[in-house]
Amino acid sequence: MRAIMLHEPGDPDNLEWTEVDDPSAGPGEVVIDIAASAVNRADLLQRQGKYPPPPGASDILGLECSGTVAEVGDGVEGWQIGDHVCALLAGGGYAQKVAVPAGQLLPVPGEVELVAAAALPEVACTVWSNVVMTARLTEGETLLVHGGAGGIGTHAIQVGKALGATVIVTVGSDDRAERCRQLGADIAINYREQDFVEIVRAETDGADVILDNMGAVYLDRNLDALATGGRLVVIGMQGGRKGELDLGKLIAKRAGVTATTLRARPLAEKAAIVAEVRENLWPLVEQGIVQPVIGEAFPLSRAGDAHRALEEGGIFGKILLTAR
Image 1 (cartoon, rainbow, N blue to C red):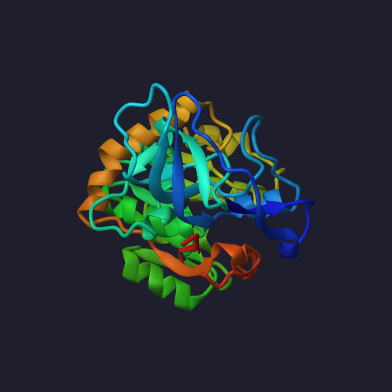
Image 2 (cartoon, rainbow, N blue to C red; image 1 turned 60 degrees about the horizontal axis):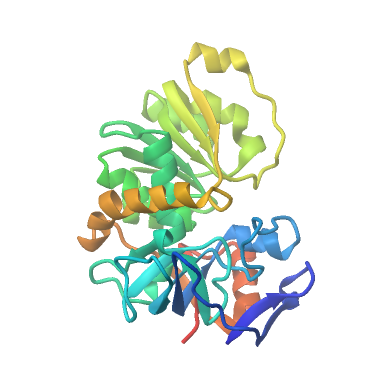
């Protein structure tokens, strides 16, 4: 098969479309003929040498895919050759085939096209595991999402609204703010021109849940924006790794701060998240209440161009890499 290989860390030109060995299905695994993968910020970090794959994972980039089951390993139940699926991966998505533990497979939901389904697994598992399973967002609460125009942000808007929450997002332009409002956000804040803390405080009693991809640079301001009993979940460090935490603010608000990652979790934890997503979120996708948001698609052989597009920051939603 062919795959995108990174022979040394560096810029997007270091991604090479080349021949590699086909994967095979071990016990408890299936092999997928990939229709599409998607680009995530973790892929950019891995390309730069800052985010190596977990032990035992493929060196090939790519944390999600969609496609057709081509091979079923020993002990796998519930899946058969020819099934249309999408999958959460620890690596290997930038290729024509990938082996994946069966517990990380999801059926392509409802009327979603096979290629478009590649935009779902990583964002669905990230948003559901953090916003619902960890932060326990409930109807009537307020959800603040930083990076509302990205893949995770556009998905979180839809999930938050489906759960009956008030959804506030931060974005980098008025145009992106308007598109987030069209997607369902109640309030969209251009962080280049507005103070999100001031607006959250003026419009609500504070955010009950904050989904943060910025890390250190927003830590103190996120505490200011939290409601009493609020829950801050940090899932990224685009704004730095180290920040100062005012424990007095945290105690006064009886609030909580959690930081999570998905890729390095044990297989059993990933399977549990995927099962929760399939049971609780997939019906919303099947009904069209939550939909994949795709900004642009590139042939898999042009993964470097896709990385540049994500780095430039003009994409709304997900970037896909099509293998067919």
